[in-house]
Image (cartoon, rainbow, N blue to C red; front, side, top):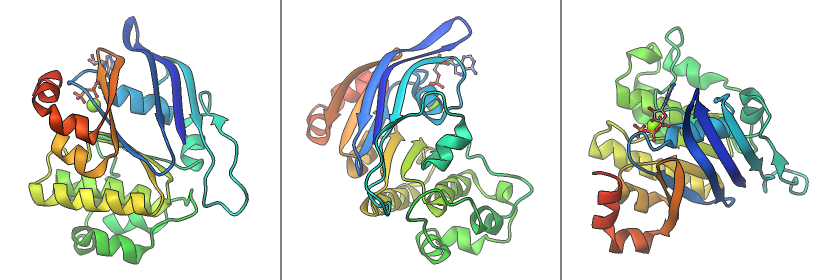
Length: 241
Ligand SMILES: Nc1ncnc2c1ncn2[C@@H]1O[C@H](COP(=O)(O)OP(=O)(O)OP(=O)(O)O)[C@@H](O)[C@H]1O
Ligand SMILES: [Mg+2]
């Protein structure tokens, strides 16, 4: 579904990603973890086409649910962000990206549909009851956690087939963290593929199949849930937690 090869990224002279390669299979949930400043957000921004200083290849595979046969993988490395969004990439930014002039309901009313299975408003309301209660509110008046939920609701409403989620549980209460976990699992059950930046290892193992560790701009390894559970202390030390 997603294949990244030889990805490097810079901010001016600062070389923050070095020859990164990773793959996410269709229907898989994969996390990207690493210390603060390791380059996780930069990597997601590169995949979304939001970072200018990059080189390497980003390929996006076809969709299985489309009416016709699977499309061949496309090299999207030079596509602008809006074309990547239309191809099914859903970006859930760490800054939430809410528009001050739009209400919660307006954020969810008519986003462009990009995938074969956009969530209906009923599904959104059922999964995010808080957002339904606050539907008339300007989105930027929501709490940080509620805005985080809105960003996630919006990409599901669009029917994105590959979610790029940047720390969607950051700052949420344990109850809301569990709710985000349920929603991500439900999205996965609907065939959505997810690349999730996550620092909370316990949470990561409840939603993901596999984990990449990014250290100093390079992929330091890929681990399954059994590895993470059996070597938790080592991982916490690697993440600087
Ligand atoms: N706009 C920018 N200009 C210059 N340097 C930047 C910019 N954004 C990030 N960096 C630097 O690039 C490196 C990677 O940053 P990035 O935000 O990708 O890390 P991260 O892994 O997402 O960190 P965190 O866990 O804190 O979110 C850091 O050293 C950071 O200081
Ligand atoms: Mg980040």
